[in-house]
Length: 387
Image 1: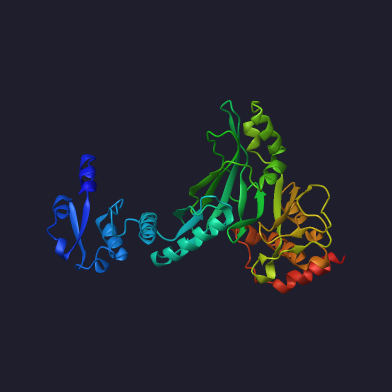
Image 2 (image 1 turned 120 degrees about the vertical axis):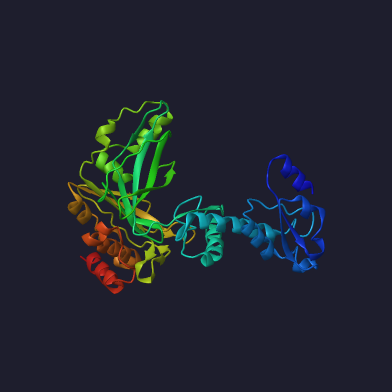
């Protein structure tokens, strides 16, 4: 009764539930709607979480007040209400959809094709997000099939100036994490400006019909920022520091949208491509750093480095530049990053090279399956490393 009176004061419609013996109770008569939930015993009526959630869904309730007793302090009921709210949102968005960790980073992501898959996918996504980021919060978005992942680098100063750079293509991924990035994109040229200071990145999906779908904005420097630096000639970190000092942006906004050549970034992970890209921690025995015209190595790897299993397995980024995509991709064959003693890293490099060597696959934005040619990756890696 207390809740119904408060809702009436606020102009909020109410829904009551009742057992058989409470059919004529005052709260039932005062509510705008009333739904039966079962026989008199509480365990068959007021304690039936599934029945109460079903009433909330069918009645279109936006919130549930548990009252003073029964399920008022029941953790399972609270969780069921949260999950039911997610299910309602999922129905509004439509299937298939994606669950994504609010913290980002490619963890805590699950594709959901049907309503039946949602509860287990939600639990798995929350658990993975909490383990990776200490935050179990997730959000939902529509899954756009056969899409490309396009990003736009932004810089904004404290004086209202925001500039956009030529776009990046980040469609080649495994387990929702990027493997190869390049600029400019093979598909589109796009730039958006937002009211944000310092470095940021707008992320979009491009579907087969050429329609754009906004994903998110990362308010930080992206891992793949070097490809933007290589085709623009701008040191983004220098500008981050200058902007933090209060300096004005003096970059030519129009020139930033015209790429100078083509750049490719290959992420080298301590993973085993012969085993579905599972993490492969251990010690790097030898390391030969790539070098040459248009080659840049952003690496945290050293000889004798112990790669732990506790963190992201990326140990190096090889960035290459050329007048167009062909020489840039050719220079991105990173076989010299590991020796025969480090077969897993060498095989990973060979796998990356196979992707770059397939122009049709690269243009489609789809990486070949991990099991496409595992034995060849290791054999090729050994041969190259012994040269």
